[in-house]
Image (cartoon, rainbow, N blue to C red):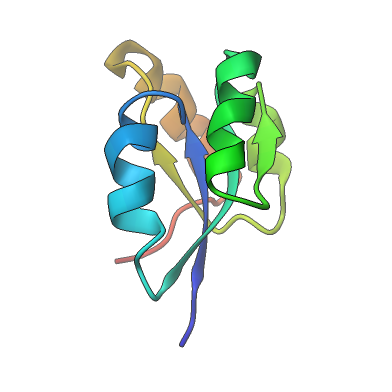
Length: 96
């Protein structure tokens, strides 16, 4: 089965509480590759929960990771516009 390799932008809030453990991790067709958050301390704690994932504190750095095929954006809504445009520019979208 083909697995979509995911990166999560804004990984220390709702993504850590719901999206990653309830959506990405149990999905047979998904693999968590990298997480990003501006809070480096919390980011490292979240990364420990999910094993071998790369950590980034800048969206641009996560999006440069060629292994990532799609991103989940879980930041406050006022940040989404910039992050969606960055993700589209780097072709980190996956047709559903």
